[in-house]
Length: 240
Image (cartoon, rainbow, N blue to C red; front, side, top):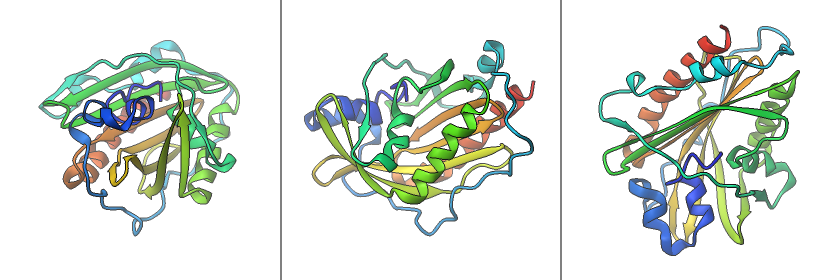
């Protein structure tokens, strides 16, 4: 995910388990985060029309991401280190998850990206918008939706490290053409997992990748609120 998630997914994939504390900030936990397997599958508003051919403009993509003023009090701007890490899933049907984590998405043009934290990284969120020509955005999100239905556990390799993942569907925000929400339980060391929640949402030719990492006790409630803020702003910008 362009490793805008420096303290979460990407960092843990890029370093050894001995670096867990630095990689995960305040989001690490030795107990498994409570799964939302009893929640409805990730949902979205039905597409209102065939994906348009015109990609989003740079101005639209800049306007699509959250700003500090959009967030509840206590958040502050953060900065993630760039990376060129390549992620590869052990199962072909699970590769869309690895693609979501990657810096580059085939066929996509990158737009704005932002990172925020609370306190000493007690919670973090990252967001990036990209755009595609033609039906590229719909093709990308369709593959992810298929992976969510067929791939519940997998291993990702990056820079020689292998990390076990388990994907759990969450309820996606409404009001956007397509949205897939899910938790990724990531085993960064034996018996030690972190579980960030993500949304990949599409509006026309644009896609946002949104991640929230927080303590398990408050993660789901905060995630729902923040994901709705992100997708509402994204839809408004994408619609012009």
